[in-house]
Image (cartoon, rainbow, N blue to C red; front, side, top):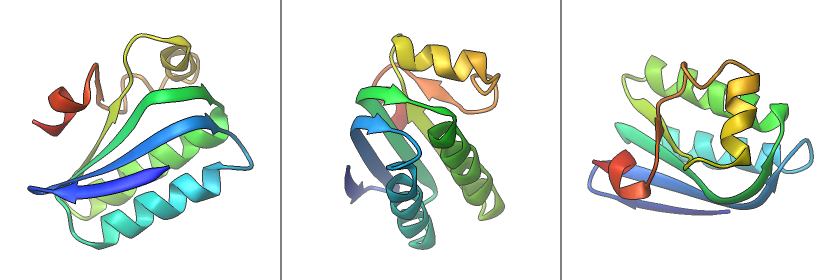
Length: 106
């Protein structure tokens, strides 16, 4: 996982798997960047191979956190098996999803 900041937008780039063991690391990255007051937080799942329901819960929590602070959370998730996880958990309508980092950052 890596983070970056710029022009009113913070990005968490996730590589590998997000599951019960790694979800706390994603939560910590989201909370840290949210606390800095960015109006937009983007979670890039382009290089993510697996995402389970604990990862989805972290993203929904991040969405709630950002909205409470007057900001927004966006997820980069091009069509892939990861997108299916969002459909199965009915969160694909809740969390704004974008096909690329450029689209989510705009």
